Amino acid sequence: MAELKIKKRTISLFVENEIGVLAYIAGLFSGKSYNLDSLTVGTTIDPTISRMTISLTSDDQTFEQIKKQLNRSVPVIKVIDFTDASIFMKELMYLKVTGCDAKEMKRIAGICEKYDANIIDCTSDSVLLECVEKEEKNNKLLELCKDKFGDRVEIVRGGGVAIEALDAIANKE
Image (cartoon, rainbow, N blue to C red):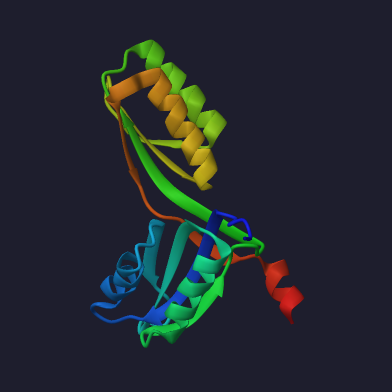
């Protein structure tokens, strides 16, 4: 029996921008017990079309089934597999740290510099950071802050958005 190779996958869907499409797509995944790592959706330049970026972890066989099922779905216009493609992908993360003293506030400023995060709001003892980076870099920032500031850390994360690199498009033509 062949060994199942589990890996991180990213797909982009162009879908009809209609009520219920997001629930329908999410339902396809939950109905088959496929877990999503993230799902981000937004309207394209054409207001009748939305673009979804979906990240998941699966084996090759399961992933092929997912893509086939999505391609058969009426509201899905196009499925693009970014798994092994040259892409740019970032996610948005907000990180709040409360109950800080002056020394910790200075430490946070240094952390921001190292992780390309921005301080977007602060009080005398709390700070709100914004980081738009790759998931791995955001994970490292979060782990560092959890280690340094414990349960005083609160986060909100958006799913990743991705687009093909220009060289990837040029190589297809």
